[in-house]
Image (cartoon, rainbow, N blue to C red; front, side, top):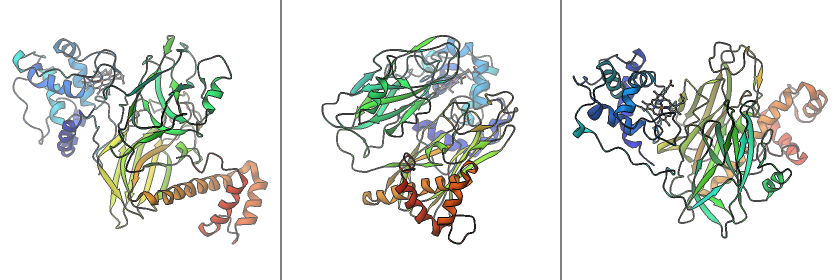
Length: 501
Ligand code: HEC
């Protein structure tokens, strides 16, 4: 699983010489190592490809062609030089901030220069004896043999044309005893059309009931956010399975069903999906608890996103102050096509600022989980600030709509979402409830902010203000919020809002 530590160490070095990469593949900046006079496949190129490319560029994996030997590389030497110089390959979008990622896919500038020079010098094979041993991958499963393999009971047909499809599939686990789970690995059969799949655990049998309403496999996932289920992360194009840190695990009770919510993007020919999921059990119960914090919460549903057609720099922001000491261990950005940049910063109680995540060239096709190399301590009082920006102009080459139209929050890939999800372990288990409460309060406050803006429900808004805006300043101030929050909680209007993320 962890092929990446070496790459990672090399990329640290590269952080100081990033500028070279922008000036094209034959640039040689001052900080780069001098290039060998005779760059060859066996000595210089193969080690780079084996370490950084072959895991996807081999039969049965995500990439459209193999890069496993000299002939493969020679056929595409020019393209390899170009895509690596542009940092299009290997795909990885998080820049270097103050956190190091253990699963980063990135070449050093020296490696990029070598690939460029190899092409320029005519792509020589070199001495066979110098060829490193090609990497061995576990056939099918990336993190070894799963303890339990579950499969969709029947294939789902994806039409050649038409809108994106969100569909839920129920995979009964038939566990005879409760289990602790450290990882799930998703294997799609229709790689060309499966965009992503989110995993949920249903312990109440609800998903089975939804499935039984019609004879089709699974059930429509549109407008259904699966909030009543426990979220277990997911897989997206370019994603790799992630093992939870050793002391953590998900609880799978005996009556659990796994629910996959899969997003299909028709690509011109009919295809059939029969997903398989490998489940990896933990040997023992976890010793620590963890939780995810999402900024903004609920993938931006409460952020009032409303991106005008033509807007080039529409920002969605959120802030959250940590009520307890935690250690963060991973961060995952999510948005659709229009997003351009992501940033998550932490301002520690002593004023020190840390950049946890920074992306300046978001690509919808690569939804990457960034695992921290070292735990990041975020003491009580740390303020997290997220900002995600969107370009809804015709100049954005990723804009799926031409001419651009107004875009709001929603589940279709032509709608938008906003989220940076941080996974955290509380320093003291018993304080976890404090974090849950703060998260819930934050969600309810966003709900209140949106409700106050709702021009269609003017009467209700006036009533809310009359009752709770004691100083009649037109706003619900922090000291006026507890009363309104309690009122809303009692009203039952917050279903799905308090708990979710
Ligand atoms: C995580 C998986 C992954 C890794 C790692 C990866 N690739 Fe790719 N590569 C892909 C996929 C998927 C595509 C096709 C989709 C696309 O173009 O985005 C692709 C496309 C390409 C293309 C064609 C680009 C084009 O414009 O059509 C080249 C060339 C390439 N990769 C080279 C490399 C090289 C060289 C490396 C290593 C330095 C590498 N890739 C690492 C997944 C990967």
